[in-house]
Image (cartoon, rainbow, N blue to C red; front, side, top):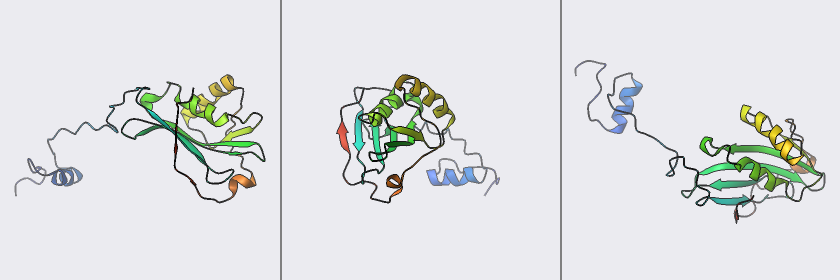
Length: 172
């Protein structure tokens, strides 16, 4: 069957993947892959925002910003306990091209709404987050130290979601 390093020309995708795995030259240009149909365009007029309420009083909740095809390019997961007046930022993510357009700040401001006087913490922070949270502290006056502090209510096991996500008007 010819040289062992020769790929099968014009083969199926599976055959080309097998050839590539075995180090055979596939001589095919890799496809241009994008995660969504927007091709990484930031377009505030086409995004939808969702809030997923907690399944228990101090349970996890989320806010998401989504592209028209459903790709959630920005997401914040947090917990807040009204009894102990504690808040925890569990996860914040804004996909690259949407960074530095205010999405992270808007999501956190949504979480802070009606929670004056709460003590907030975060889980371990990425390099980007270590730059983001000090700037957020400066603009909101709320400190976000990176040592997660949970109360007994936040640790209680409950359903992750009790109801479907609620569509939001984009927070400002």
